[in-house]
Figure (cartoon, rainbow over the protein chains, first blue to last red):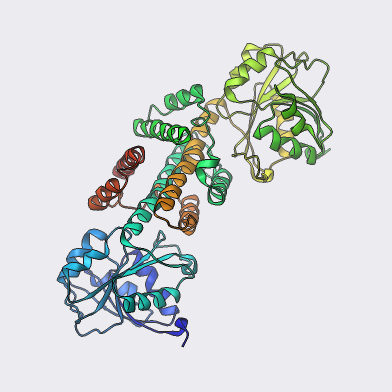
Length: 266
Length: 266
């Protein structure tokens, strides 16, 4: 039998952006999302609707009567230990968290279940569809049979499936914060500066597209441009003067410029 | 006569990335690049070759025998005042600088010439072709006839032509540093962190693409994600611990996270 045709029974715990995007993708891939739990019943219902899943709420999910091949824990990182401890699991259930930051050792506190990691490396929004085929899925499990099951599940969604150990995944997660969250913040600052100057906010679009195309096709440090790497002191000073109305951004400007110069100096 | 069919005689001063990309684009648009000057003759020759332009070198260009409709100053910002002062210009020559940072008032020191600005808002590389049709060209001139000429020249290259006053342009330039130079540096840090963890460097590509698509389609501050905006203290601490081998990046991580939180707090 081909792996792609394996069909699993999946329970989703959590009803945030990850669960909301996983649920229809799993259904489309032929799996059976048997249930969706969230502390808030209405949130679980929203994720469960249209895919034939049962929704249930409450603070401590009782899963003993809901058998599944895998339980995907899609709650916020800081809620995961509490949900893991409070839930009543079927004996030897396979539970995989979906976090970039949490260790596999999270499951050491619950010796009656089998632990795994099913981390989709993507940023999820409520109102944007995800192209799951391109999303890297980073897997981890102590047990080879569990890893095989998670691999089959992952391959049914994505062409990019990797086994990534906890320490690697945590470093990947830090890298993703720089590449995604911090990059978005810088684009927000740029957007705000354009608005302040009464300039059209799409003016930077071609520059941003070219910057990203370049940075994704060559090591970014080797194609760095701008006043910092040129040590153009007059421009650096003029820019910081212009940012005086935004002390936090002026400070960031200085730190980022210094980091660019330090990197270039080796 | 249509503006697009106007053909100008252009002299390029400088042989860096901007001049190297402008020269063939101007020639393709039907203009006559009559000469290219650079301090280093060999650099001028490289830009001049293949478009029928004369190349010349030396520290002080004598342009009195090289009539042109416009002289485009494509030298580094910190070299511009010296080149402007040292060159021998034809009387009333129209000279436009191509800098995001320099004021139009740069030309006040040379009352015998007409000054203008022809600023292409894009990042230029030696080995990547530029799609000039999409590059915003930001123009400025004190004289309306000069602005009309610069506008006709700009429209022959690009569909995005704007008149942008010095103060606006300088703020735009700061915004571009955040959106381009600083973004590239963050992607460089992410790339280095992946390499350290022995992870494939293209692993973040789908995440970066989606981050940018999202940030360019909605105000970036409204779609911010990540541990900072969630105030996920445990993850923020864990990430800073992971970055201890790179104190400058750890510092940046803290500053950027604080800036995200300050922005969200309004």
